[in-house]
Amino acid sequence: MREDYVHGYSEREAVRLVDQAKTLAPLLHHDTSYPKGCLVLEAGCGVGAQTITLARNSSQAEIISVDISEPSLKQAKSLIKREKISNVSFQVADIMELPFEDETFDHVFICFVLEHLPDPVKALLSLKRVLKQGGSITVIEGDHGSCYFYPETEEAVKAWECLIKVQMELDCNPLMGRELYPLLKEAGFSDIKADPRVVYVDYNKPEMVDGFIKKTIIAMVEGVKDQAINSGLITTGEWDKGIQDLHLSAEPSGTFFYNFFKGVATK
Ligand SMILES: C[S@@+](CC[C@H](N)C(=O)[O-])C[C@H]1O[C@@H](n2cnc3c(N)ncnc32)[C@H](O)[C@@H]1O
Image 1 (cartoon, rainbow, N blue to C red):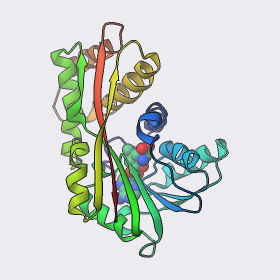
Image 2 (cartoon, rainbow, N blue to C red):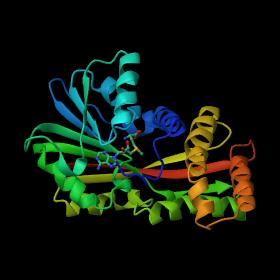
Image 3 (cartoon, protein in one colour):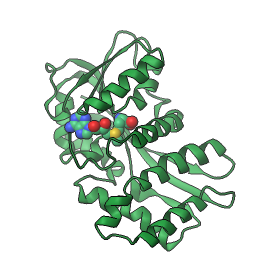
Image 4 (cartoon, rainbow, N blue to C red):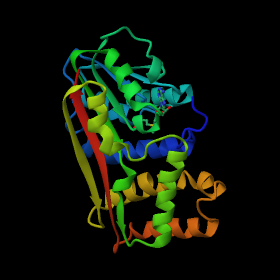
């Protein structure tokens, strides 16, 4: 497990991942469903936040969900048990060295993981190895360069940019979404389709104001507070004002815009 993994493995981050997945499920999962009898690999399942939707939308398929973090898998297992889902099994595995034979899986699903890996093409090639010829890969990523909000104060923008800079300092790619098509191409997949999944939130969508702006986005920015201040990217005063100002976008007079990207391709 990477000690410096940008979002960490805290209880708070586990809650954030579940909130994020729940809020975004209709947008990101509505067109992913695997038929009866398929064997699907979910790579980097974390605490199982996406696994619930994946398993429910493909209840006749068999899913193997892997992650490099044993504690996360433990949480994923209890979540799936609580939700009474029975078509998922879990395994500790490093995406870069998957413990499966070539061409084991009918489909591969990977969400919010590539951005954290130093060599995403190598990861895609590793996933391609265990995918059957003709099988599909689905990749979902965010793109922190696609974020706009109103009102936009200097401190709010600075706090947001800390998220991007901290991730970059840790050799991650916070702008991964826009690269999905070229990455899948470089890894040799065919029939590649990548499209932006737009999230626009104003006060007309109270569940998105809470689930997306507050619990997904602002919670994610708050997660890099110590790294941002300790590395001198921002002062404590600027940080506090920035977070306060980001909350203004969740007020009746505020708006928020963000682009996720989903790529689907064939081996
Ligand atoms: C941001 S979380 C996303 C989890 C989940 N896919 C979701 O959307 O809620 C990234 C996950 O990737 C896992 N991860 C990072 N590097 C990995 C690797 N080399 N092999 C397997 N999992 C990895 C981390 O442990 C973490 O659980």
